[in-house]
Length: 380
Image (tube, rainbow, N blue to C red; front, top):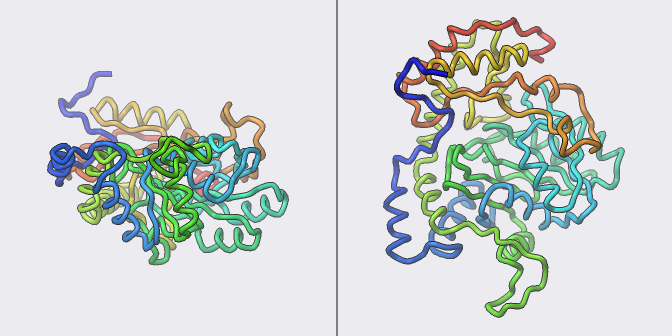
């Protein structure tokens, strides 16, 4: 489709206006380019400090981080693990990588995060559920106090998948500081990117040791002796250098994203055919992605098409995982919300480098689109 504008506005791209090149150059000059080096250790320390965690272990990506987190809390093949039904597939994929079986639980209307009530029901029904993964959706936390209490009562570990919530907080505590183990992603579209990468965080020294050991091929020393099945899951020093430069500008980039979200909020205030994704009172969101809900899937496709004609990238967001082929037959605890969100949530441009002029272009393009009104039931 031909754009009316010569410069395309991307959805969410890295904001590389810091010391990325300087730190990468230092890696090359010092010959630290692989999965060892001072930048990896410095990034681990930076994330431990940000979250108040005792230990942080850098990984090759966020999916690997979740996989290692599951293994580190004792998940075995055949165990069941609760996963939100409305999340990115990586969360469920990591469960499968561990040989475990996802149990899909629906999300809350107030935050589109894992429903504590349904988690409680699932845990009381099924003693073979051995862990719960709570995803912080697109920049704010799940209800971590409620989920932590439920998991403690059931005696199962809680894992916080904070992939997109770096810089956010829950009741004043940083996202990534909850659960037995938590994880981050530094994928290219995240607020803080390392090009690729992830992080596992914990306060448990033994869990951290297991994560680090498994991530380096389960090799205790320099001899080629291995004491378990291991993985090549360590982050490279080059990636860590980019991540370190990004961390220096975390507060600046989060402030930019919050300002962008505020302008979108204002523009949507009086619309009946488009509603912003809820941001709950318990969290201060990092506003990683800005998502809007429309009335139906045809409207979502029309919105994406309208924006594309104006040279603006947007994308239909997550869909119910339990409704998809890889997870057919998995047990579910559903209210219907994740199904109703499938195909009707659209992400709008929100890079931290998005200029006011670019956002004005997006807002003008949104004004060209008109959809069906969202009913009260759909908005809930």
